[in-house]
Each structure stands twice: as C-alpha cells, then as structure tokens.
Image (cartoon, rainbow, N blue to C red):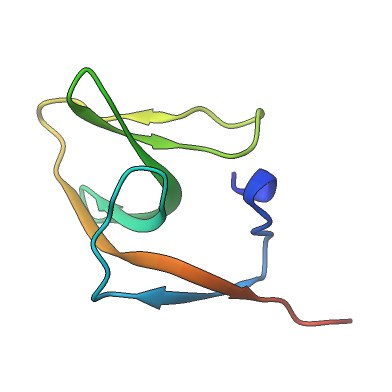
Length: 81
C-alpha cells in the first residue's frame, strides 16, 4: 500500500521511535493491535492513515478504534536479488 512512497513488499524499514509523528510523515501505526505503515494526515481534526497506492484505501479511524504510533519511518533497506 506504500509503493508510491518507494516502500515495497520485502523492504526493511528504519523506524525512529523518538521522533514525533507529525502530518505528512510515514509512520508505523498500531490500530486495534494490528500493525500498518501509512502516511499520517488529519481531516476535520481526525487522524487518517493515507495509503500511497491507488489500489488501497485510506484508513479513516472510527471512534471505537485505538491508534498508537509505534514510530516514524526514516529509511528503507531493499535486498537486491
């Protein structure tokens, strides 16, 4: 869901847990116990996790969902075949 940001299946992510998750940054998020990687945004004051691939939907959090930012993605590492 993040190919538009240059993150592909099998990539390793470098994540800084000390950075503040601000809008526009790519984060590792935990939603109801499930990990995902998305770009953080806010719409009407509510957090939205934006996919960077048109084939995936953005995640708009419902009131009943819990969002935890595990860290901010700072780099990717890709193995060469």
